Image 1 (cartoon, helix red, strand yellow):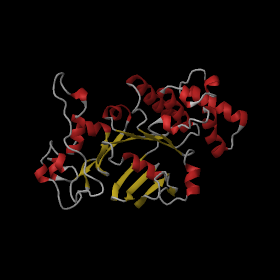
Image 2 (cartoon, one colour):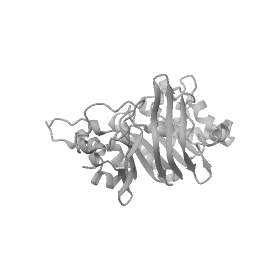
Image 3 (cartoon, rainbow, N blue to C red):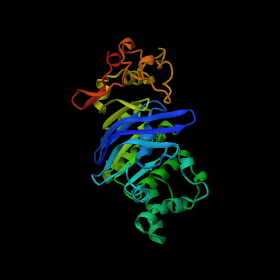
Image 4 (tube, rainbow, N blue to C red):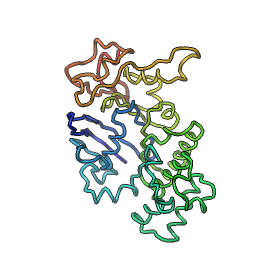
Length: 323
């Protein structure tokens, strides 16, 4: 469905060049759910925005890479006209905050029917019927009445459901979910994830799930990419990653999950802060925060490359982080 190779995206700012994403490669198959995890600022969202041409240029610039979609087109080399035909039709995106993603001045009806009018030429009553059906499918009560409401008249969970309906109304091949459950309580979070999974199973949609929540990843993802400071540090199947995490950063993330601690035990946190991406270290970017490996052995003169340490289990070849 999608094969990304050597993607690098940088932002040219007054304070220097921000190396937001460096040499990232991954692939997604039809019907598969790929999780991309890491701390805030690790490059998860920028990687996805780059694929859809949503990086503001300038200051952003895609320096290298390819993103072959369905063996047909390189998304990174596509024209704006080609991307407009793909975005919202064959590739849809659920953004992190539905309140800022939905237009507060337009009714839900207008925003739901717009993709149908633009991409499929469906208008009027036919578009309205499809929009009402889409709301019903995502569990909005009384969709015939709520279709004419405005975003502020919906709760956070309901707005996220509207975003899902909008993303799936054209039955896309690939759905990118950028932290779709961050602002939701646990009950609504599960409902939203179940809803995405249900739609995926019925439509055969491939899903990229961007999140910092490893608990969510363990429930819904088939494969996982772990990112840190704009680079991939580990990539494997979800089962393998949780069973045999190799990189010190992956182990630190898993150890940071509160549920893994004994009651009354002091919670583990990763010390320090990620390095500035305007001046990233020449070697391992995690060595100064590495408490679960051996930072004295970390590579310092060149960025460690990904190697296959086990079948389909790739990890940065840094002796200090693998210790």
